[in-house]
Amino acid sequence: MRRRDFITVLGAAATWPITAGAQRPAMPVIGFLGYTSPVPYAHVIAAFRDGLKEAGYTEGENIAIEWRWAQHEPDRLPALAAELVGRQVAVIATTGTPAALAAKAATTTIPIVFEIGFDPVTIGLVANLHRPDGNLTGVTNLSVEVEPKTLELLHELIPAATSIALLVNPANHELAGVLSRNAEAAASKLGLKLHIVHASSDADFDAAFATLSQLRVGALMIGSDAFFVSRSGELARLTLSHGIPASFLFREFAVSGGLISYGSSITEAHHLAGVYTGRILAGAKPADLPVVRPTKLELVINLKTAKALGMEIPPSILYRANEVIE
Image (cartoon, rainbow, N blue to C red):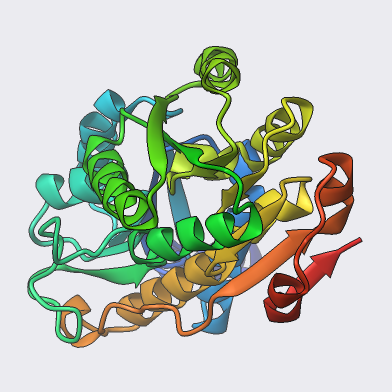
């Protein structure tokens, strides 16, 4: 071998260990556990990513996300949570009460950030809202607490209606039970007859709305549930086609053609969950992050739908609306 060639090879060889040792460090991995399916939740996922970005993290750049969706089948959640634990993710983010409970059951060490419509103390996710104990914290949209006010609003909107229905998802039994009991107590105070109607899949909607027609209810409240959130547009269409004045907690329902929505923003809730997830990746402990509760509730009224239903919205309610869709 000529001396020049030998020096070239030797120089290259000297760089081999450096090149091999200069591999990029593995990015931290977030596990996202959802009760529903990803497509109808696209705007929620975008809000979660925005929250992460605000905290300094962007998927594909300095973090990776392992997505797990139960496709509205709660029995799948424990196995999906176990997968994320086995993957040794840095944080688990959940949406929906069943997903949060499954994640809590799967690990006591991996930090968990939840987004739920329940009081997390009541169902045992955390010991205290201001200083959570253990490995969980997150965001609650207070849907359970808002429900009685929603019933009062419907009664004010349609005072002639003496019979009102509540749609709940029996598969989400913890939330469905609390929503049903609270609504029954609120209806009793107002002298209203309350009917509980069930749906836990797309296939159940036809039977549920057939029941509503048979009952001749004057209005419908749609109970808080991740599955119903993902079907806001379909529920808006069904309520309008069946001529039923209806309310849901989230703005997406009224925008899609539902009569009214009253509650906090689900996109803002997931944005905040993304921020908390990022803060934990940066070193914060769940126990030091208070559970976030919304400070603002919004009333959205769809006047176009009201007209289609032959209704006139009282000025007192229009005056209180944060947004009117014409």
